Amino acid sequence: MYEAMRSAVERGGANLVDPANAEGLVWADPARPDLFPSVIDGADDLSWVQLPYAGIEPFAQHLDDHLTWTCGKGVYAPAVAETVMALLLAVCKNLHGYSRTDTWSEPAGRQLAHSRVTVLGGGGIATSLLPLLAPFGCKTTVVRRTDVPLPGADRTVTVDLLDGLLPQTDLLVLALALTPQTSGIIDSRRMKLLPDDAWIVNVARGGHVVTNDLISALTEQVIGGAALDVTDPEPLPDGHPLWTLPNCLITPHIGNTPEMGLALLTPFVEENVRRFVEHRDLLAPVDVALGY
Amino acid sequence: MYEAMRSAVERGGANLVDPANAEGLVWADPARPDLFPSVIDGADDLSWVQLPYAGIEPFAQHLDDHLTWTCGKGVYAPAVAETVMALLLAVCKNLHGYSRTDTWSEPAGRQLAHSRVTVLGGGGIATSLLPLLAPFGCKTTVVRRTDVPLPGADRTVTVDLLDGLLPQTDLLVLALALTPQTSGIIDSRRMKLLPDDAWIVNVARGGHVVTNDLISALTEQVIGGAALDVTDPEPLPDGHPLWTLPNCLITPHIGNTPEMGLALLTPFVEENVRRFVEHRDLLAPVDVALGY
Image (cartoon, rainbow over all chains, first blue to last red; front, side, top):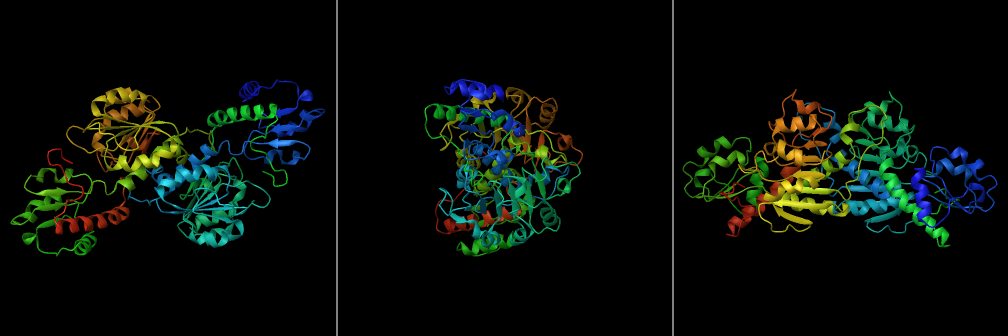
């Protein structure tokens, strides 16, 4: 990743310098946010920080208004939207069940076409997902902070209307940012509002779903099931009850794999470096107050 | 099914009569083609037979030029095309592998977007599949009997060009009719022409693939894997080697489930009955010489 970011910086028209002399900082080690304070110590000319992921939680404590922050939001969205489609279709066709059997069983499965799909979050993933869903003729509702319509959605509503929507939802896609307001947004009470054959697909962050509530809902078949690309805790430890539930499909945060992700991030960082050099608006700015 | 077909006949404007007095015959018991000769014995006014499935192999020996034959080809295509999308995305995202594990494993997976998808067969399934694939920007090639372009395909070529195409194929979808010419069309030689990470998705008939050749190719990783909604033999017996191969995903002919299928077939038969009553061209005619 370091080499990819290094070449992106150079192709973007900037010079690589020590942090102390830097005007911009591209953070290339997602695993070590703890190093951030020491790296920027003494970097008096620093005005811009590019963070490597869509979610900025690991850096949340460092965010301030003195610097301009950008992240990878939207960059990975096409890859994540594909994973959403894969999970939606898999659960409609019982692929998790068939993968686990070694005998010819009864045909099961329903059509994704014309299903009622509710997407929590009106960002990059929803924007990339809606065109993929379009040919299936689903009834799509996007739930977001504002009611500014998202192109391609049949309806866009604000989050205060969520409870009324859940009973009319066949497939609930979680594709929102994790903030104090959205942490645990899907709890036992809201799962009970869903139809008993509804599935939850979570490609956002594990913390959006109250894990113990989910285990109960899946065990008691309050909902049809859950396909989780993110979990809380993550990684999900061996022996966790979610691993063995027949109506739960878990993928290990493959929304974007390292291989896919770097291929998407590198040209994006190059473009942002170019914009920084040319004093133009940067892509994917973090709203420090909103936290994403 | 009998009740559904009975109501379709009546809503189409025809009267239900004994076979001996019938002008048209809607075959409502797919499991008993053997009864066909005795049912039509003495049906001197019979001119049209509606068969219940897309594939007409069980009735192949009864086909003749004295009667007009129609089948269900194209009727189930939207449902089957959805299953193709589910399988394509599942294999790209390793969902068969993740379904079978109970530990957090390495992120794997590739993008369906921009993949090279070759579809064998230019009928209803391909016609329904191409719009679903369109937003993924895949490079699509349809291989069919004639080179009449299929709308939505990047290329349409005749089957004699198949061998040259296979090395440039990431995902090979089998969606053609089973005839003496297409039986065993995917054998060991052709599998070796595919890239070693290519996957085969078969939603047509098990007989298109030489099963023993497939087992070898999967075991020796000559190809990436296979997702099979149809098998030869079918149903696939317990203990068959395909059940335990990690790079094989088997679904029990869910292209259309009975529930989905009847919902699609019933209005179709009603329409064909109406056309028959009104002496109009019938939908889905079987070409007796071609066998589909």
